[in-house]
Length: 90
Image (cartoon, rainbow, N blue to C red; front, side, top):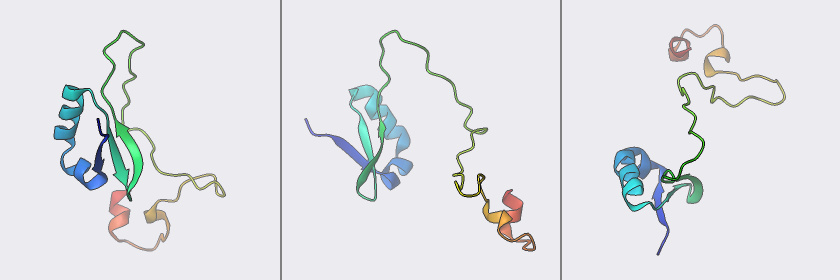
């Protein structure tokens, strides 16, 4: 049985269909980014186990932190004098 794969673009455009297929077939799908494995979408094991934590993604900080500075610099912080689009996003 061959491994199921999808590109990031295919996954973004068809996530619901891919997730439904993974759930139905119980076969994982490896998502490729730049032709390299990036993440795996896998079915949840139905056996009794510890509950899966519920993550509030709206509150999760997913911005990379610069190790040299110890904090992240948002694009809007690069130029405080600029009243451009990034100022509205922060």
